[in-house]
Length: 231
Image 1 (cartoon, rainbow, N blue to C red):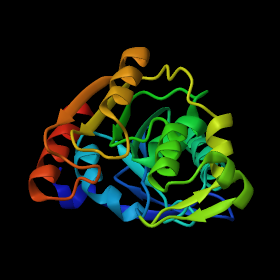
Image 2: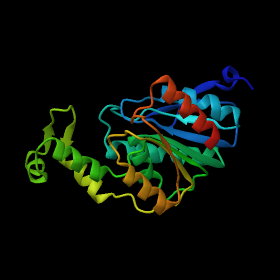
Image 3: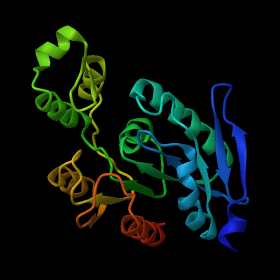
């Protein structure tokens, strides 16, 4: 089957609130594709070229407020997508990018997934926000009082978001998972990734000299090869 043929796609109405794009011909196996910040369902096209050839369909959708999506917006959408997938496919896997991985672990922790592929995942949001608080030169108490603080480095600190991260830590992730991590990822420290993998038995691939966002030709070639080997 050629890449062009396997990229047959259709738009599905999951609920009255949102729709999704489904790639590939009929199969009993599907990957849910969860994009990261600023992402969209269109990113799934390149992954679908490989997944469809291997006998999967790919269900991709846009998270609300893609640039500033909150977990209380994302998690209900993900759970609705999972409920839809359970009615249509017997085998469900997950592909998640960056913050999409964190949202997915909150949403799908009690579900059965055949395979999980995480690219540059955010694994500890509480620690990430605390780092940003330090980078901004403010205190947790100041954030609590002001509720929202705009930083000089372009991020918005939100106390409600921080409390959500504190109250919803990722516990044990007992699902088969493979992680692609870039050596120079400035959002998640390598020790956080290694500890997560050791605790949960995840496979880890580290791309040397890479960045959080895989976007150069070299990075994308490595990403596509990793995807093909891990599906």
